Length: 522
Image 1 (tube, one colour):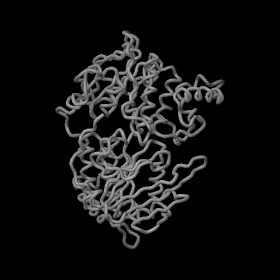
Image 2: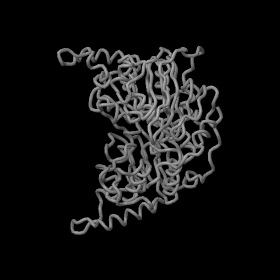
Image 3: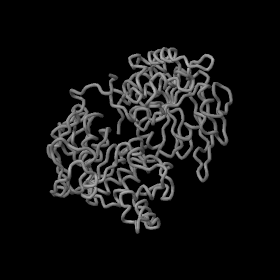
Image 4: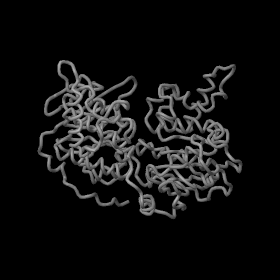
């Protein structure tokens, strides 16, 4: 498999190779009860470079971020910041030193203004009183530095689109005179044009001598924005200082031991059943999508490709009854489904794994067995009490089938990696006997290795006769996993084809044609 040529850019890594490192980690170890999360990690970051950190979920990236940001103190090893051996006593100490972290789930306060969020915790004060005028003026200056002076600093940040909220989070980092900014999956919630804007801001930071540690599962982004790459696997550094144009297949191999060519399971030779499991006719919700019609057969995977805002997720939620349509109908096995009723959809055999699994699908503080059993509580209840033993046994059977790691169903679901959390959501519907599985961005925030496992699970379910309706922002995922592809643009299906009869450039051309810039600040 030949990689496309990397885009031309200044090689900052080479240009700064003789500079003293800004950050150096040597032999970093961090152990939790029963888990050695970091086992001798090595990392070097130079001023003004974008350094990519790669690794599967569970490789140690999150723990390493928390060590760098002062949340955790390492048990062993050496951390040198600007040439001096350092041990941060907490997040505030790391921020004062010049290390800022932008987490995947932004830690902004929705009801506070943009300016208040940017200077939260270090507001300009005199005699204990906050200078609100100075807060607003300084916030405008920081946003202008990022090239986004148009963002209104007096607007509550919760009223901004996701891309603008991320800019505010970046502005917060810069407001503390950061020398190093850690970005955890910054492009996960962004549309294509918003990612380009993110990259422009990162290049601006790089030109100002600010270093960035960039964490992403999207290998194409590495080639475009990063200077060097470090790979983690099982808490160890398996490759350091790799060039950004390292072939994708080699990066995947260093992370997982798998080759890129075998990520997607093979499609069955025989076509799916001729019968219709799901029929959607003329489905419409004003302002979201219009006149959407398609079918899903038993054992068939149908993928929906399209830009964020094209109506993909809204269609899934309407089919599932979470949204009520203005027109059209949904039939399951030839019987019309009651519109706007989730219970009716579940009784008909539908199950939904939503895009925001942590906030919409999981009880993070509850054990795996409780989360798997949510859709089948009545099955394991007697006289109003849940029979925990039966619930646990059923959940353990599903965990074995999905190869959940770790297999302990008594473990709280928040401790699992993203890929295994997604397996829990799928397992819930599997336990409930779901016949049509609706998957919205099933591999968002999931590493390459865990993706391969999820693809295997999805294909095995389809091979067993389950129909699958899949939404994904990643065109290769739709083409590689689905049997049939629907392309959506601006709320309408503009093309339907077998996955083997359409390619990525064609899909991209279809979804981009005539599209408006999304996420603009009003």
